[in-house]
Length: 88
Image (cartoon, rainbow, N blue to C red; front, top):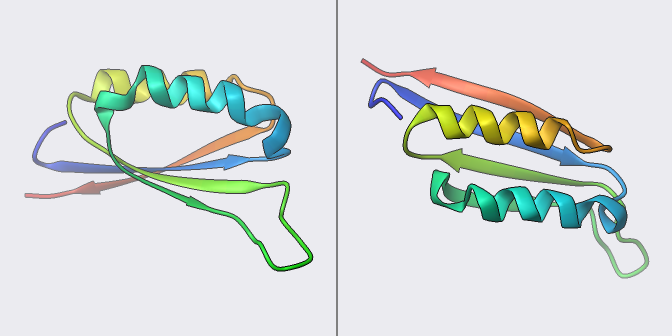
């Protein structure tokens, strides 16, 4: 990744129980491109959300980052959004 760009991915996973395996496989395949990973989902004593959000801070060359995004988007129940910050 160029020093001029900082890429953050938001990966929303619906029905985590059924889709998380495929998502985790992609995360593992592109693990060297993931600098920071933060998982979020609603939970309480009586409720655990079936949906989840994973925030990824990306590192390294951009080509594998965008390949990873395409693979994630191809998984049923997964939506990927990006934030790209340009630095000078």
